[in-house]
Image (cartoon, rainbow, N blue to C red; front, top):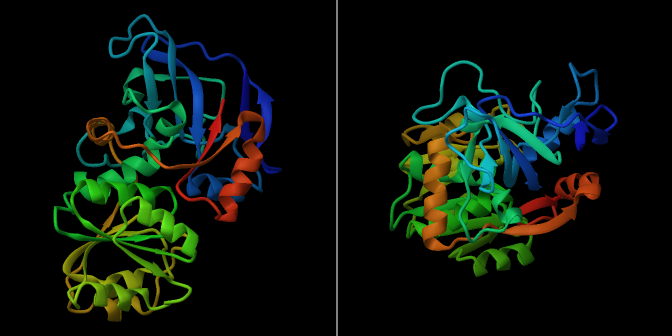
Length: 333
């Protein structure tokens, strides 16, 4: 079968042996896969020696085509997606110790024609989602869901602050509106801001025009501050996020687009506020299943910016790196 591997020279299309499911494994025909910023980091970091070449990407959707003889959770023909942490985090709090995630370290990902994983690694999909839409759920969708719902940090009437228009932020916008919250969204593009308005964003801030977007968020809330922030920026945005948040509010630490070292202004911004900061690194299989029920009930559709063919996988990664996308970038098999 064909698969895209992570190599020092870049993603490389290779021939792999057909996966044969073990007794508790499920064989899935992959129909679509989506990209996350993590995949770009992994590709950049792979330019030196690697322990072995792994298959790229963590997020996909497909159809069960065979099962091991001990499988009981799934049947041939069902539409499924694999969890980001496979079968390593089924429910509750994150387990201690290593959490082996797909498409990173020494673990194969999903950008292949077929994959075989333990039956516990999969969830079934909402019926009205296309495979391309469903492929966006395992990382970005579950992360935003975990930040707002599994952690209990958003309720009707709250104010949510979203940074940018990448996958997690757009899912966060959609889930904030499901919760009955007011959504403030930042971007450097007026075009993207208007697209966010169409998805329900209540207040828009172009941070190129208004660099002090934290002060703007405070002004929009009458000085009170927002209740919840999806913090994806890292070093250059965290102190501003703290200043924009109400005393006792919640900041979900998700990404580090500008790096992970600490802003020297963070301590000053946080003094006396009692802001809660929580590290959100995707979520459990139960979170995924809960999210899918909500998506199905509300007929919510993930935002797919652009779909590339399997042969165009490198172009898809380059497009993600360009930052031109709004929502998710998908590869169709």
